[in-house]
Amino acid sequence: MQDVLERYGVAIVVGSAVTVGLLYLMQAVVSTDQVALNKAPDIRTMEIVRLLEDVEPIKKRQKEMPPPPPEEFPDLPERVLDPIEGGEWSPIFEEVTTAPERTDIGGEFVGDGEYLPIVKVNPKYPRQATQRGIEGWVIVQFTVTERGSVVDAFVHSSDPPGIFDRAAVNAAMKFKYKPRVVDGKPIRVSGVKNRIVFELEDEL
Image (cartoon, helix red, strand yellow):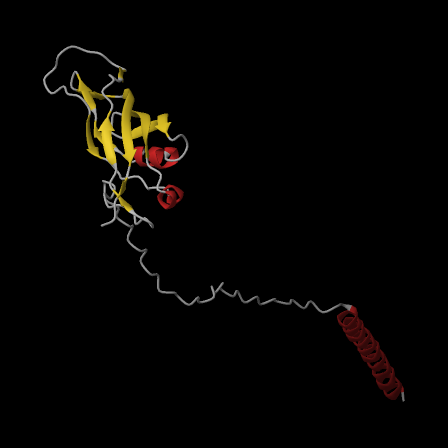
């Protein structure tokens, strides 16, 4: 009888120990699950950005045309008379013999020389004077530059006044000269005078 009681006692003790152990084990498992559930998941998001290369719009290439060649003008003005209605004429150019003013005076030098006319452009005969048969003359005074061009042209005197003045001055501004040379250098000459005669030619 005593042996039976001892066996029951041992069984009860062992069973109690096992039961207590199972309880602790279950509590530990439950606590671990709660912690795992309460903890927010660590989710890492990766943003993938695709870099798009800047693509320039393809422009239609236009065929570039070469620029037109510059117009070539002759160095010397034309000597052809402009057409005039009501009559024909040939101007008369006369160099006035009064000595022009010299802007520079030097000694004798090989190659020195006076200014010489190279080109004289025919003035336009005013249409009103042509229709009325008016004739006359104009003395134009101007300066010959170091390059042989004419500047500062103005009417010195004219007859009849005001009829041919503009035509004479416009023509004189296109005159070309060989410049005066002093001490081997071209110089400016002021006070040069030209008399331009306007006469109509008789029609045959």
